[in-house]
Amino acid sequence: MILPIIGYGDPVLRKVGEEVSKDYPNLKQVIADMYETMYHAHGVGLAAPQVGLAIRLFIVDCEPFSDSDDLSKEEAEQLKTFKKTFINAKILKEEGEEWGFNEGCLSIPDVREDVFRHEQITIEYYDEDFNKHTEVYDGLIARVIQHEYDHIEGILFTDRISSLKKRLISKKLQNIMEGKARPDYKMKFAAKKGR
Picture (cartoon, rainbow, N blue to C red):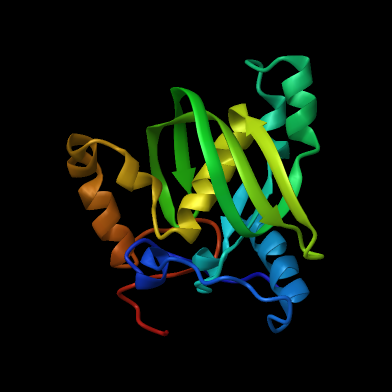
């Protein structure tokens, strides 16, 4: 089922997600709905708070990034097949140079800014079958994970840009809060209280 994506300004996007228990109601269905919602909106990642659930769950599918000309064949191949569900994730380490990349977010349509993040992460998480993993990622995969991880910590990519850039996009952010954004996917806006 395609779920509405929660727009910038909704308090759920600022909550630190709660741990997900093994007996969380309909967890497999929630995950399936999140993938369907993400693909429908042409995203590469989606976190549970973006569909109104303040829990530590996010999904990632980096395949859309795999056709960039700037990538090595090896990295393109990695991105093409990188699809994962992260439950109760915890970033243990962020290492390496910080590098900039133009990020966007399904909850903040039509806003894109350069965000600087560490090039490598070590992350601990559970998959959808509650198997525990500790893995190291770098490059675009690490960046997509860091962006989604921020969501379960109540952080948005706009929190990671300069105050000048924030001022420059403040009108766009206000429009999203007021429900004036018109992306080609279903959204729920803070000003139009239905929750």
